[in-house]
Image 1 (cartoon, helix red, strand yellow):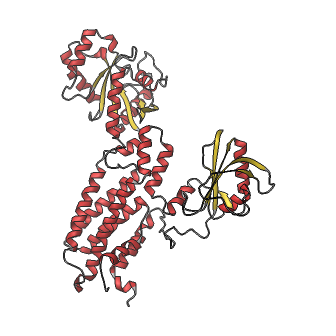
Image 2: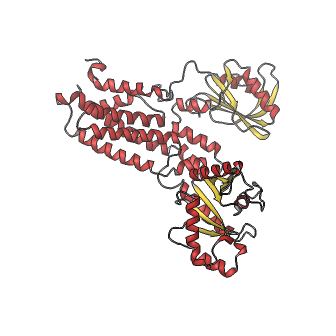
Length: 511
């Protein structure tokens, strides 16, 4: 029987190359398993402990221990001298200091034997009272147990990833869930943590690995007539379909990234139009100085908002005008820079400056918009100080400007009397929701710039396959290999064994 390297030929070389090309990426670990399917624990793994609940005074605090010495910690501190407690069962025990045997607290203890724990290792949880003195005493007592050390930031989750409990996208979803501040962020993070995005990428990765295995097999064995006809044609179809799916996925207008980081909404316009007043109304506090003096705001004033469950980073900017004042000119420059970076711009106009003839208002606003925005695609027109207009003119203006060609949505408001603010908030919320999308419906969206960069490289690599398919099959195969590696760097799983498994599963080479 020929050795594996001889049997597989170029296929073995391709698989090894897959691992080598991943060395420039973060050090993803190839996962091994025990005979029962559980990930093999590292023999020299430390046992770590940390406070897993929030800091500060609270009713209950959770201290987590993970690693091979977890059972020792449980015996030393909870008085289990012989048998350990039943797995995943909460028991009320006295928590003692193993050095002095002093009772530190009475609380619940839970035992999670490997591999059925968050980290995949033996784990213990101590649910104790949340006073700072109690927490400090328990942590100091754990530090005295041989083989235990304080955990580093994110180390429990890292071990869960290394044990195959979580993929990288699920780890990122967990981090987003912890930091979620709005309802929509929570929904998106929970959906990603459930593995939906990871399963999508893993499905693409599995299909690409199959394509790579088939191409490599065709290169090495087609001359010996060991490969069936039509293999490359099926690869062509699969690569074409995958490239189209990935490119559609990339054309999401950054909805998931916006939802994760917050929608950049910038308030812009001429001096004394009421921009700072609008900012204060939206955040419901005096975040910006308001005065009748033109040019009061010189720098960018930012505030974070929860707008109907969607995160918004709202920025008030300096009034746009020509000025000889160096400080004000710098403020105007920064304002224009923010407008270019904005996801949505609220262009505030003083209603008193509109032409008295209502039919000329649309032309005036178009000209004003072109002076403020290079691109009027994503903006709302906010006509402030509507309370200064006569009632008839205000009603006629509202009717005339609805749905006018070349103008975005127009909202008449008064920051002084609150007139129109409710309708404006409805329009603003609708615009922000459109920018973010609904995290509960449709295909899962990109949430990280890291994902986007790897997917763009993956799509480019598949284009390389199609470019060299008929002229140099080895270069075409390299394109598929790069695509596989790019997807693997998203999920955190890049391995040579997976490609070899597909080869032996799909082909009967030498029986």
